[in-house]
Image (tube, rainbow, N blue to C red):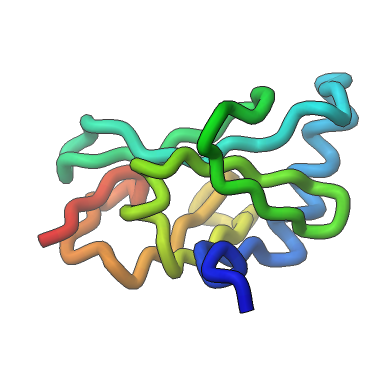
Length: 114
């Protein structure tokens, strides 16, 4: 099994929503969805999501027709996470279930790792 296959998981619900957004925004099939980590947020690190073309050294994973891009630096922080989508009473959006996070903020958009 390729190490990239264990990098992250995306639930069917999240994949469905990503596909819908691709279609609504008229994104090119050449582009993928990039999941990344940037400095900031109340816990030190924040998740970043964007549509973009692949870059050199990206980790590229395919979930059906959805191409997921992760830069090498972010892959350290994202390894083992599950990306889900919630549309319940507490809000609508992507949910990152990160087993590596030692601290998360109340909004769930930032985290820290010891």
